[in-house]
Image 1 (cartoon, one colour):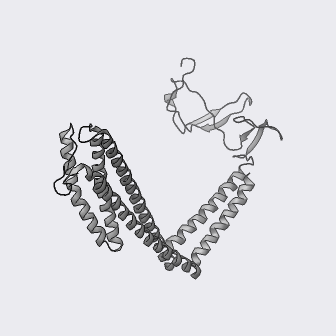
Image 2 (tube, helix red, strand yellow):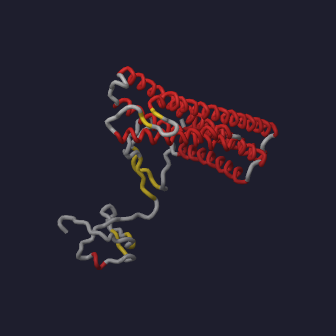
Image 3 (cartoon, rainbow, N blue to C red):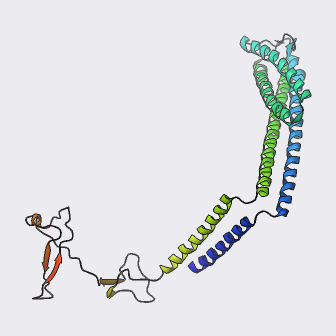
Amino acid sequence: DLIAQTKQAEAAIAVEQAKLNEIKRGTRPEEVTIQKVKVENAQVAVDDAVRNLGDKIEDAYTRSDDAIYNQSDQLFDNPKTNPSFKISLADSGLRSELANRRHDLETTMAAWKAHIASARGTEQMVALSSESASSLASVKSFLDLMGQAINSAQPNAQFTQTNLDTFRANISAARTAVNTGISNLSAASEKYRSAKSAFALETNQLVLKNAGSTPEAIAAQEAALLNASAKMQSIQASISKTILRAPISGVITKQDFRPGETAQAGAIGISLISESKLKIEANVSEVGIGLISRGNDVTIAFDAFPGEAFSGKVAYIDPASTLIDGV
């Protein structure tokens, strides 16, 4: 596995090196030409999005116009000047609110229509889309209120159940049409924003290609190359770890593993004795520990070497005590 990873790492280094060479060389004229075409196509997409936005605005106005003047105004006396809801409602406040909303919509629709007729250019069309969204929201809110009023109305001599059912169906259809207009306008606005963002992106790309590679870009690619090289070194280090090496110079005293055996995690396979100076740990009673200091000379005797004395020094005194047999 590690050998395979080594080959992959070598390939990655070659790729990053090729990228670095390409960056240092700069943009080819053919690439600049291609990018110019992309900018032109992006501009065409923006123009198409603006035209589509205009179509959806006009469609939204048409839907709103039909919903108000052809469907809702059947239920009002003097709808354009002094609107009054024809059907008696138990909620007089709702009836008054309907009249006020219809009065306000007359101004909204007139202004909306005038702005549609005078809109020229992309900026005005984008501003008109925001106004159209606001106007559609007002129309939707009015139609929702109309639906509430029609649903609560009771038949009488003037408005039979058949009349009310027809009005309910008309208002429901008008609400559906306006909701569709809202969705269409929202989608057209999003399409314009996406086209505008794409045009800006392609334009910036053209500027970058004409400007050539920056020192920062070259430095970034050099860093990518170094990163690929570091991965190679990491793999090589992993390969080196597949060989058991003694961490110290010494003598092997025990070897529990044999070639072909499966090594268990945590098991000791090989033991060594260091050839450097030995360290001896000894317990000293609390009675005598206060008499000992670092650097004191020490004489050491081993049962295995009777009659021989070895010398050393106190190198460290543990600051914590150890309890042995109650002492």
